[in-house]
Image (cartoon, rainbow, N blue to C red; front, side):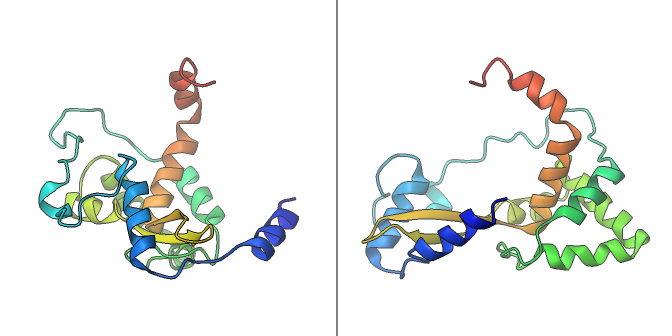
Length: 173
């Protein structure tokens, strides 16, 4: 299942859009959340809104389940595209061959999940953005987050799926 839809998508895809000023404006419009492209002189470093996350807030410590972490790592898609760090699932799979190193990676993931390693967290929060062509200057932005970020996020989602479903049930349609 899914193989036919992947084949159809590849045969009908227009591929990655060539980088043009029009494509750049369209991407900026789509990711700005305002429905319009930011002004040409917009400085993302100084004019972007500050992050809403309160790093200093008190919260219970999240403990990642090693079995769920290992299972999510095993299921991480081979050949996946890298995010901004260049780290791929294929690189992370190497940790499966060394229990000691896998435990260390789990500890790093847990620190990230708990708001530690802030400088690394800020970097992993970025995604590489690839414009997929929809014809003309129309594009669909494809965000490629870091492999470690995907691993930690998928571990948290699987580990707490019942709690998340219960919490979100009143909001889901």
